[in-house]
Every structure is written in C-alpha cells, then in structure tokens.
Amino acid sequence: MTPARVHLRPTMLSDLDFVVTVEQDAANLPFITAWERTQHEGAIRFPDARHFIVELDGQRAGFVILQGCRNPHRSVELKRIVLGPKGQGLGRACVRLLKKMAFTQLGAHRFWLDVKGLNLRAQQLYLSEGFVEEGRLRECVKVQGADGYDALIVMSMLDREYQARLALGEELA
Image: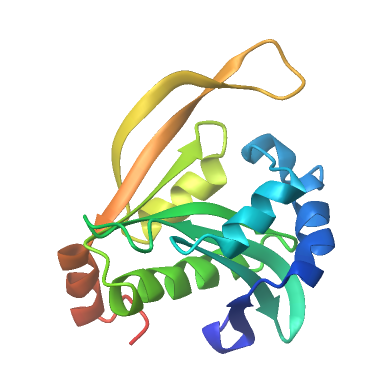
C-alpha cells in the first residue's frame, strides 16, 4: 500500500462512534484492551496525547493514539493502533507515518510500544519496521474470554536507529 493513500487526521468528537465500533470489532478485541468512550475523549483533549483517525483513500479505516508527546525525556508511546482492513499493508503504512511523526515532528529520542504476546502478526510488523524488543511483562494481561493471561512485549526504536534506516532508504523521507 502506498503511503499516499493513507492519511492521519486529528480525531474529532464526532468520530468517537466510529472509534468505539472499530475498537469493539471481534477481529481487534483479542489484541487490545478496549477503552470506554470517555477515555478516548480524554485522549483527544489531553495535551500530551495525539488521537488520529486513519483514512484510506479518504475513508475512515481505523485510529491511532500517541502518548508522551510532551514527555521531557522525549519518549513517545504508540499507545494504540486499531485498523479495520487487514492484510492490505495499512498497518505498515501507518507505522511508517507514525515513526516519521514521532522523530521529525515530535522530536522523539525513543518511540516505543507494547504488543500482546498472542499478536504475532503485529510483532512481526514492528520487527520488520526496525523496532527492537526490550523485554516481556509476563502474564500481565488477562486473555479476554479465557482463564489465561498473556504477556506484553515492550519494543522501541531510538532516533539514531531511525536516522540510520532513513539513510538506507528504509523510511519515508
């Protein structure tokens, strides 16, 4: 998927029905901890966060949340990425746009995330996009609809790693 087809725009309060719907989709629920609508409202209003609608060819396709945008340590978190369409490269296009935003617009030194251990597809995406696994929080989240627990895997990319990938032509210029 070409990044030109994917656009991030600030989430409006009028988008929140869409946000809650895509978040509650059965294909997404196993991989996230769903928020209440009021939590999304807070993220829209909180100056340290950025809440975006992902648009594909002008149509809403998901949302993303960044936190730590004013972090004094310049550590920006990819808090949430939730997409409707799967298997079309939309996730990769979003991650590339978000890395560019974190390092060039927000001045991040470190761009990080956590991903559930069962979400192998996302883990592979993040690894292929240059994120490095930092560690695992063992059995720290309950598996929805089951008696077990899942791990959270913490991954990150540093600004110098991003710059090296940019120099090799592996990132959006």
